[in-house]
Image (cartoon, rainbow, N blue to C red; front, side, top):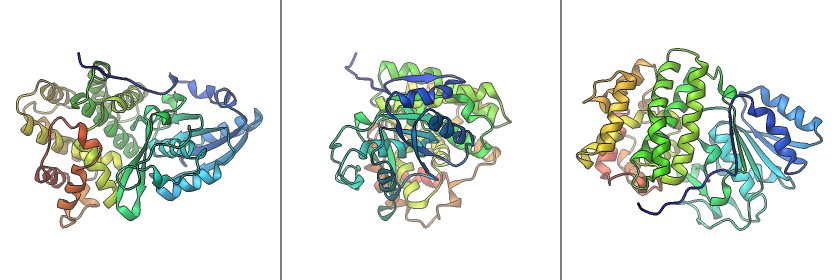
Length: 375
């Protein structure tokens, strides 16, 4: 057995009702809190009031969309002097909260630490304590050690990454995802599914991540199938668990070509991350299968997809696109023109950090073909 390591949030609390523990958790770190929040969950107003009633000084900052370099800078300025950072929202909000917690104690700019387009330096100081509360089931950001940041001038999304950025506490309350819009549910859910499939196929997979992913892949497929038809509390619970499992797995085994392409496509063309991942999953799996040849793990994934989504076994990877069409999800052609320099997009994706864990090396031509198949 090859040596491996496994790192995650300091503590994870999972279950309906654990959101009620947030006030006490925050008070355990101090009295002044930076509350970073999305705009869609009204319950956060009650949380802010409860924090104030408990004696906390609350600095609130709303976030919409995936965080940019300027968003990070604004959050750092807003958070000067706080004791703890609380992120309540989707993966983008939690990523912004992790970035703010990492940089508030530092005199360095975010560009000093970003991968690929920045200086990539390690953090100069330990981050502030950070508590993550996801309101969508998708990214698993509550248990990862990086924050994905958009750099518009470079047309890229890249990571601020440090082992110390893992949240001190992840409060995963499935009830916070109930009744989310169908498009958000399916888009984020597809991201969650990709994030248990890619670590399972990863060249860095280990026994812990394998155990998580083997259980979560069929569970995620079944949950998505149910939620595509309508609201289902049990499916919400399952998808939240799959998202958590994906965060745990990717933080320790890496991802693959889907996310390697998604970071570049999202930065260049602005398509939603979850939808990019969902639309690329089938084409990338097919390309990997062709490059790898016979593969037990690839056959397992194909079988799980075929059985769970009622797809033809031999052509399951190709049939995924038709399934997403049936669900009414947009193709990437809505954002990416066919003459949008896909070759350059593939070239940039080929050197991304996520691509390093793909189970095989895909040529730039193969990556470009994957993008075209998703248009």
